[in-house]
Length: 391
Image (cartoon, rainbow, N blue to C red; front, side, top):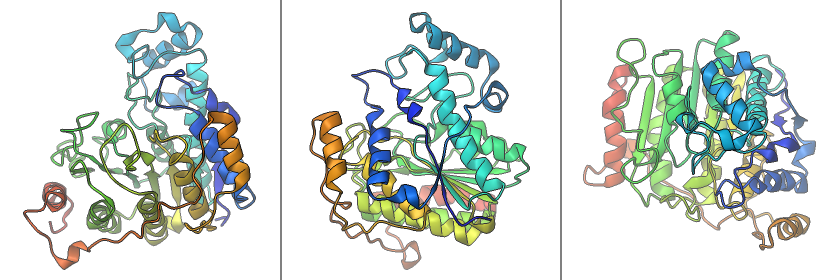
């Protein structure tokens, strides 16, 4: 097993572009890679491109008729069939849609293959994490579900236990749906409560298909307004115990940056510093419980495209590379110049929001009247007994 982390990157991912007025601005990807380079992290990782996901790979998760519909819309966006979720407000059709989406999927699959084959201990594709796409439809800015495809490829290669942990502010519904009946995959999603945010799924009672899949889906629905202490408390009250029990061969994580208090599309109040703390926790959990520390880390949502996303995912790359960036580090002026040139905005000055994240351990007790603790209790009571764990 190589100790050198792999970073999946291809400039062509910025062609995944829904248009000027869409919140998923591909500049966030270019700026993230620019910040990675500005800190010299590209010298600490093995930067690789990958082949686009071909039809046989896409069909591990997606229906053939859906792939054909995406391909047709890619050639003629005006002819997009909205029955497949494309050509909608959330997922406008654009020229080259199939090619850009298949490339992002290929990068995540390539990351999974590198980790499974022992070419790298950790692999990052921050351009991925498009977790809402369904087998037969685009959804929530996602055309092909690259996390599900990466997991499906791991299963095809022989993996028997894969854990997926999703900390995006939105429920990881597409990945959950893909493995709803599959006991080989444990999906865990921490997200804003479905009462207040798209996609209105991810209730704690969603625990997997009856029978073999029961207990394979775990959902922590957090109250709107949850900040650092509550977010970290919920993560540590649920995720480590599940991974210790499941003992995945590979840990796949999704790090949507839209939990941040500046994000315009959601209602949590998490800082960059807490996001970094969860990234470090996922890294530690991979080394503690996954075979040989195998860890595939993906990006996801995030719509504060200058202030938050590039810093968050650059921290992710540094952690995976075993070259973490000190939060107090000053952002290189060369990158801030790039930000201004691309966006006419001023970039952030440091790699921190100035917070020192802390939380109270669940083992110290809980308050049944507290909304955050109620959310954690609902999850533990719904799924832990199904897995033979104490709620």
